[in-house]
Length: 78
Image 1 (tube, rainbow, N blue to C red):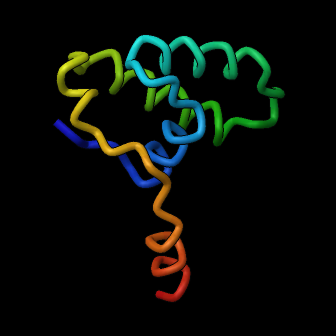
Image 2 (image 1 turned 90 degrees about the vertical axis):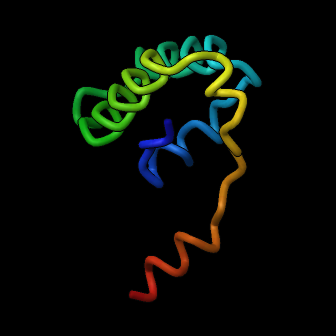
């Protein structure tokens, strides 16, 4: 189960604590600090939290949560 978008993976890399529940807690705390006009980040955070909530800790442990800046550069070149 890996239906995370590129942006969701990058968000998880930034806030990763090493566990699924820890990451969910960190994203939930960050979400509280968002300004009302940060609706894109709010939506991204909500979709990430929803997907994390549906997966098991075992599935989470198989994710490679390392930012891949090369993929973003490749996407910018297109």
